Amino acid sequence: MKFPVKHVLACALLAVGAATAHAQTVIKFSHVVAQDTPKGKAAEFFAKKAEELTQGKVKVEVYANSALYKDKEEMEALQLGSVQMLAPSLAKFGPLGVKEFEVFDLPFIFDNREELHKVTTGPVGEKLMKKLESRGIKGLAFWDNGFKVFSANKPLHTVADYKGLKYRIQSSKVLEEQIRTLGGIPQVIAFGETYQALQTGVVDATENPPSNFYTQKMHEVQKHVSMTNHGYLGYAVIVNKKFWDGLDATVRGQLEDAMRQATDYANQIAQDENDQAMEAVKKSGRTTIYTPTAEERAQLKKALVPVHEKMSGRVGKEIIQDVYQATGFDPKKL
Ligand code: LMR
Image (cartoon, rainbow, N blue to C red; front, side, top):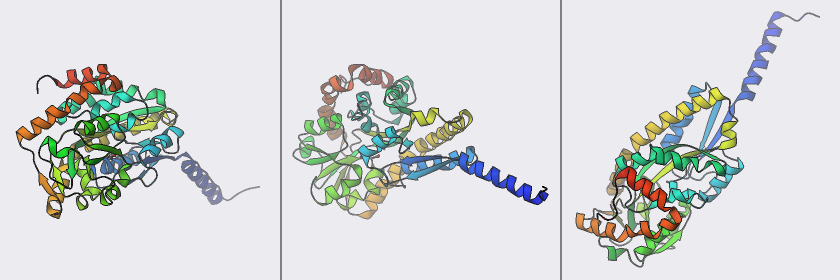
């Protein structure tokens, strides 16, 4: 039996089409912040690059704003393989049992981004990422956000002003200790529930980089911000290791390339995004922004650096020393 050439060709095209459709890999990339943030934008950038470089073999679906999972659940979902990619804040690895990551939460451990990058782009960062593998997680990159500011419904100028307030924090033993050291009461609340917790008075203060503060509309429910830059908040982009190792090697290489470009982009925009967010808070006229004097900031630093020593049993003396060595930080020189 003979088929017309046209028919044979159409069938062949259909078969190729079906094979291509079948071969498309979907990466679900879940995160908890708004799209209009350093992490949100970098995730979108990665999605576009990944699709471009793999010529459509990979589709990255980005779910922002805790649309799929909240803080704790997203880590479980990654380990189970329900999502393939996340970029949790570095604080979120402590509760997973990789306590060394809490070194990033130590107050005043980095003075600026240059010091931070000595850790995230060097051997210490590499060593930290390796520690995730036994948890079924592969670390791909560190993405910047920024230095945190404190906010409350009263002015925060001197160390004594911080006392007695209830603070929303991420789930981190180091951050808990930081708040206790200030005489405050720490309360762990999921990021997506922070606005409501501040609005209803469950807590009356918090800390976050400006980009998170503004895009979660915290300026609507916090009257005062103090530009303390007392600690750092950034991310590790991670994938389910089994999924990653199972990818075709060429595709994996293309995704690594997309991730390198997304990381450059993330780290380029992070500072600007935070500056712009603070400008927007100022423009809103709803929150008073205070910059501590050099003396006030020095007092805050003096009060909080002892948290390093207090938490060294949990975070690990070795990793703290590694970071000190990379950045040149000396806790004795305050
Ligand atoms: C927070 O919970 O405050 C942050 O980790 C949110 C984020 O991912 O930036």
